[in-house]
Length: 68
Image (cartoon, rainbow, N blue to C red; front, side, top):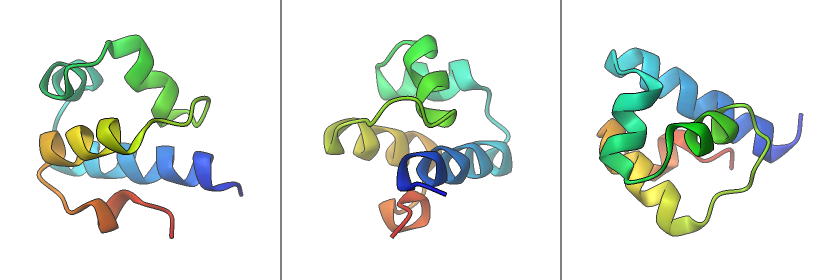
């Protein structure tokens, strides 16, 4: 599996564990819900800044969502 898809799966798992919707995380990360959904599906490669915002929204360390 490529790292982009793995990243998306890790983010989805963390989001579900936190009991949040895609909209919740997108709003807290200041990105569109459509873009967030594409990140979860592994369709786009988000910047480090976006990943940091997502990790903060999920209240997890970046090491918990990064695929390496």
